[in-house]
Image (tube, rainbow, N blue to C red; front, side, top):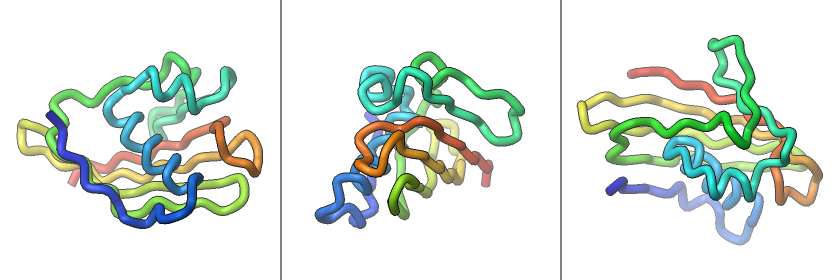
Length: 120
């Protein structure tokens, strides 16, 4: 079971909460949640991979995630970002930063995601 440490930054901001939940869903490959929060045309880009995937099919779970620590989850207008780290059962640690563009300022669905992943 994966331990999740949340940022504590979401307070009364539903968009910040969505940003945090999206980061967790992307790392865990939770397709059910991603289908709910991503538009049908959404793209997920793993920066440095030089490819974009359709959001509905493009999220793959990271194997063996033991802990996710969300450091920041913020939003403003049509953008949002989450950052933190995750650790795996083999002892690896990855720093991440995900950048989201909402389909509208209301912020209930995301149209694109850029994912930065750095092994540390």
